[in-house]
Image 1 (tube, rainbow, N blue to C red):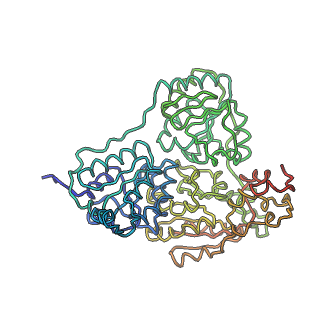
Image 2: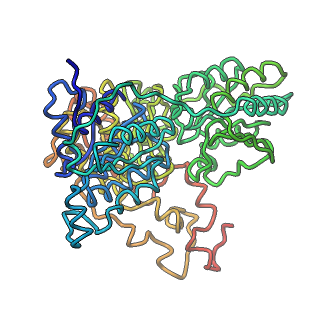
Image 3: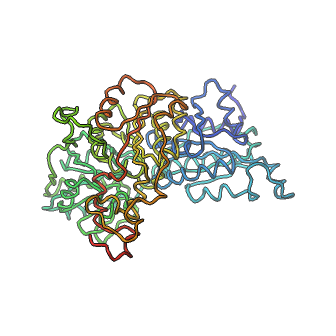
Length: 587
């Protein structure tokens, strides 16, 4: 006989398993323990609870997992846990990652004692809505479950919203409610998709096709293509029109970069020079699912008559705008309309593979005898031949992201980066989520020393789970990107301006990092550690990695004021702190 009643905790477990969840990230807390115990006690549970080192790391794990699996969940405890997690969830909200936040709250009795007597239980602020009100700002649905009566409805409501909008949702459950009984689910959750106006989509496609007549067009693919799962429709558009395409940095690897029509990452002024020059020469740029963020544009102006922007459920065409348009519908109709008209598929250049002149046939050129220091461009040039289809690359914000944008990624969805929210330290814990989501792949992390110091405890979790992640810590001894944004003068080399104010001539003291022996952290966390001071030593380490099955930290030393070529354009303009100095002469 089927069960007539189950606990609220079991109801949520069933729903999460129906969503295909296999890993639940988080930090154990007494207010959430009844739910975690429900999973633990079920020997047939499909969910493994991953207890991380802190809530920020757990949130970044869940974010990356959601990108690759389409849904994730993270469980924390009230107040201290939920507020710590907030940064990670805000990143998932900004970058459209469907994450369920499960927050265990004090009991109903505790809440009443607070109201009647002013008595605070652990982690309470005195306002019983303090947690949910904060999360309303970074979720598309938030519910507080105070009774078993409406628990099923509220659980289903937030999960429906998570599926529908592809963004985080929040579920707060009072501790005593977990064990209360409710009716079991009677029907599966219905997977819903936002639908736009097909008439508007058709009208926008016809307008763009008319603009394309006798023009050289190029497509610019973005992150919405991956988030909405419409890579198939994007490739059909590319292939049936035989048109070349680039992607945004946020949309890197939405499809395999082995595709013959793929011509690189266009990242505004931070693009490789050849990509930027040729992209600008196209008569009509059709941007599909690209967000207009600072990192996507790098100071480049896309608000032009020769640029179509299809994103955020609308299509901007010059000064005109078609609202309520599904990107999927627009791409399907655009394919149909373009094959009716005469246009030119813009040809940027032939097959492009990044190479470093330093390397010959995958190894160090025999003519070079001296020990060559590692630079960002030499490092990522070498990584381009190291990374293959067995890897998923996770890049942190700042110089690593700019350097990694040119790595050729053969695997669809083989590149993960929080390239809009840009919470430094994202990459290391995100690698845990990547490996849990794709156990058949090896995660490779590129992270700066400053970002690594934020979240390095995630290495402990990876070793506990017996992962084989490779973490390259790119150590230039400073918060390089922060210095570049306010005063790039120290990075100008021979073109550096000699200011009367000495601080403008050097890296600011507050951007200096305390030097760590990063490779020695494996003595604490476990795994293998290497230290690299030059290209010879890097090459030696790379030859060993295929035989190493443990988590690995590689400490790579770089010159303090070396920068990736992609951000060198910043040197041509004054930084924020230089405007008031009359000696500026590079404008």
